[in-house]
Amino acid sequence: MRLVQVLIPRGSRESVLESLDRQAIDYAVFEEVGRGDFEAMVQFPVPPSGVETVMEELTNAGVRGDSYTIVLPTETVVSQRLSALKERFPGLRISREELHARAEDLAPANSTFFSFLILSTVIAATGLLLDSAATIIGAMVVAPLMGPAVSASVGAILADRRMATRGVVLQVTGLAAAIATAAVLGVILQQTILIPPGVDIQAIPQVAERTSPNVLSLFLALGSGIAGAISIMRGSGSTLVGVAIAVALVPPAATSGLGIAFGLPVVAVAGAVLVVVNLLAINLSALILFYLSGFKPLDADEREGVRASIASRIAVIGVAIAVLSLVLAGVTYASFQTASFEQQTQTELQRQFDEADIEGVELVSVTVDYRPVDYLLGNQPRVDVLVGIPRDLQAPPDLAQRFDDQLTEGLDRDVVVRVGFVEAQVSDDAATRASTGAFASTSRPHTSGNRTLTGTALVSSPGAWP
Image 1 (cartoon, rainbow, N blue to C red):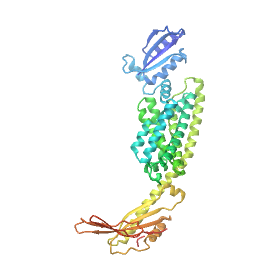
Image 2: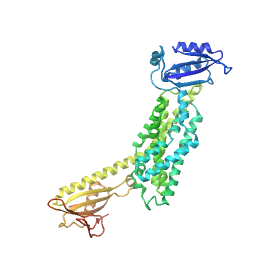
Image 3: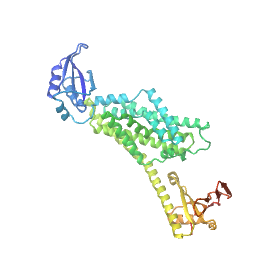
C-alpha cells in the first residue's frame, strides 16, 4: 500500500474531496497554514497500481502539477474500503511519479558512477586474466550500470529529456571508460612480472568466451533489460538484477580493452561488438516493457509526441541490433561448424580404427584445434592424433598423410594432421606400467621411480590408419 499526501490549492478543496468520495477512498484532511496558495492537505491510502489513476482524477479536480505531493510506502492500513480498493486496483505496478523517483535514485552522481565503474573494470580484467569466474562475478556487484540503463528508458517514456539524455551519456561514456581502463591496465601489467612473457590471452577460457559471441548472448541482454524494468516497477531485487546487467556489459568491455593492450584486434573488436549489442538489447527490452506497462507522460499534450518518439527509437535500436546480430549469427554458425567438424573427425578416426581391428592398436585421443575465427578466416583445422601401439609393432611412416587424405575426402575440408604414438607395457597384475609420451621430435628413455618412459618420433603432414 501507499500513503499519498497532497496539498490542495485554494478554491479546489471541495472538488478534490468529492473526487476522493466518488472513488470510495478514505482520507484525512488537515488545515494548511505554511503556504498561502494552499488551503489544506489531504492524505489517503491506495494500492501501488492505483496511485497514478487517483492522481489523474485529482489533477482533473484542480490539483496542479506543481502541488506538493508525497507518496510513501506503508506496512499496515486498516480501512473498511481497503478490500474494494484492492479489487479495483489489482497488481503491483507503481505510478509514473514513483517510477520517475526510483529512476533518479538509481542513477548516481557522475563521480560515484565512474569511480565504481573503473574499480569494477579493474576487478573484472583481473578476473579475466586469472580465469576466475568468482572474481568476475564479484566485479559485477560493484558495477553501477543498472541505473543509467533504466533511467534512459524511463526518461524517454515519461518525456523527461534530461533524464533520458543523462542515462544514454552515462552508458556510452562509462563503457568507453571501461574499455580504456582495461587497456591501460593491460599495458601496465605487461611491464611487470605478474603476467608471463608471451602469454596468449585468447587461450584463457574466460577471455575466449567473450571473443566468440553468438546469438545466445542476446538472450542474456534482453533478459537483463526486462528484469531491470520489472524490478523497478515492482520494487524488488534491483541489486541482483544490476549484477545481471553488469555481466552483459563489463566483462566484454574489459576483454575489448585487454585486446587493445595485447595488440589483438580480433579480441578488441569481438569484445566491443558484444558490448554494443548487449547495450542496445538491454535498452530496447526495458523501453518496450515500460511502454507496454502503460506508463506515459503526465501532460496529455506530450503523449502523442512521446508515442511517436518511442516508436522511432525502438525501430532504430531494432535495426542496429539486427545489423550487429549478423556478426553474432556468423560467429554462431562458425561455432556450430567447428564443433561439428571436431565431432565428425573423432567419429571418422574411431571408425577407421574399429574397421582396421589391429590387435594391440588403439586410438588414445583425438584433439582438434579449430576455432570459429579459424573458420571465418579460412584457416586449416589441425588434428592431433595419439595412437597406442605395442612395442613390437612398427608404425607406418606415412600414417599422418593417410589420415589427412581420408579426412579430407570424408569431411571435404583440408586439414593438417599430426600423429604421435604411445607404447605401453602392462604386467600380469596390472600393478606396474611403462608408457611413452608422443609429440616429440626425438626419442629417449626417461626413468621415474618404477616407470620407464620411451618417446617415439612424431609423424606429421600438411593424415589414416590402413
